[in-house]
Length: 304
Ligand code: CP
Ligand code: NVA
Image (cartoon, rainbow, N blue to C red; front, side, top):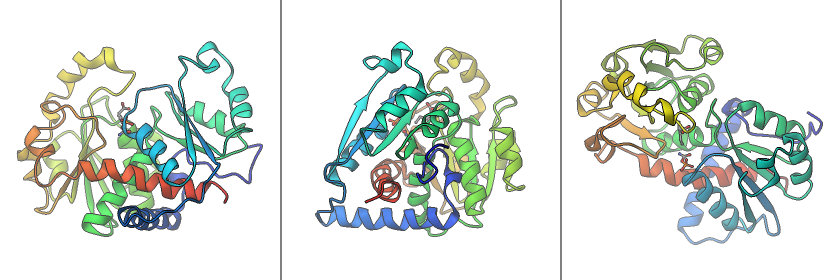
């Protein structure tokens, strides 16, 4: 890293446990301030550049609204109408953009892209989702769990479905916050092997979603085909047919179990409508908390 004094947020494990806990506490405080109509504008005149190589609703709206609430501005950049889409090297884009703005958020395919960008950036870089992980969403999910149920340490979390970027972020969270993670996925759809090895036996891979859900305090899932996997959808629908989070699956869990989904969701595929729209679902809180936790993250990363 050419700018070693600058912190980036490329995966959850870029934070220490204490830093992550402090961010969650701060997000809850910023949420309270926002609800009370308190004006808090530490970032007047500051800009966040947001590069989206994939679609987004929540990430774009939460970062843009959050930056405005903090007194700053957010800039939406897509490869369709920037030189990024015409082959300007990532390193060059990083050098240029980071001389003009105060932080950069990137949503892209390869983790390597955010790493290369960060290595050549003068300002903090935030991973807004890659094929490897979704570190902003996991922070919002941890905040949401904390608000509803308190400390997640020592709890049991079940991930049902694809061992994708969100699942990988749950693996990192299990390591950082010391909870048990049970992943139920079909063969060939496991989460990242290196993360699995690093999480110190806290994660078990199972094939039976009921077994994974047994006694869980939180059940989470995500789409069967992530962005970039659209052409695999039919094959995946077959592979994941037994992995829908239904009321029967929820009934295996602890009576106070929460249901989470990062959204967007497909009712009748990875989750039954009765579950996502039911009393144990906290999906709208998860979505809202993207705003608050990312404001806390911007405040943590951007010097002011
Ligand atoms: N959960 C999430 O990141 O949503 P978007 O794709 O809408 O940003
Ligand atoms: N796993 C999904 C999450 C979307 C927010 C994807 O990568 O498309």
